[in-house]
Amino acid sequence: MNEKVPFWRNHVLILVFVLPAISIIAGIGLLITALRTGGDDPVLDEVRRTARGAQVTDLSADEAARAGRYAAVVRLDLEAGTVEVFPVSGRFTRSTPLDLVLSHPVYSAEDLRLQLDPSDTGWRVEAEVSTEHDWNLRLSPADREWRLQGRLTRGELAARLQPALQDAGTDP
Image (cartoon, rainbow, N blue to C red; front, side, top):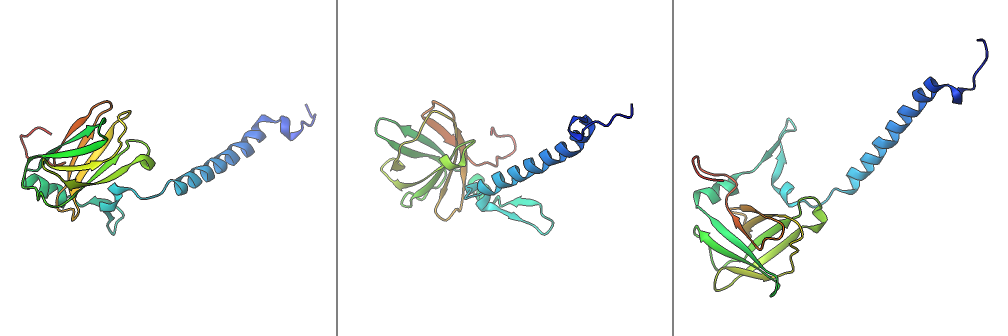
């Protein structure tokens, strides 16, 4: 009973030293990963912090889109390699270009920002867009006066864009 056991054979001592060491290494790894993945996120452009640290999003562009009853359709033409936007409702300024952000649902490095120029039927730009995964879509003019949002699901070639805020009693 009085036999001395080397410390590396004592399981309790191993847990006392190994578990905190693993926690420290994991924490450092997470910190490094978080610092490396920071970058330009278009959604965070409109987020500001208050004095208490809570996040508040500016919804004025969504409110303007709802008030103006804006709606549009985005269509991909894979053969021609184009992306088109067609107005459905609202008073669009047809002479100014529109900005379309296609956000990958997982990898922000694959996000696309397109500037669509006015065309006979709406707005158009030449771009290759993959249909292998979903896209979160956000359409706005250069002055960001209003904003429409939608989702292009995998394999689909068109999506409806509408204000993120809806009137009571309307479908989202």
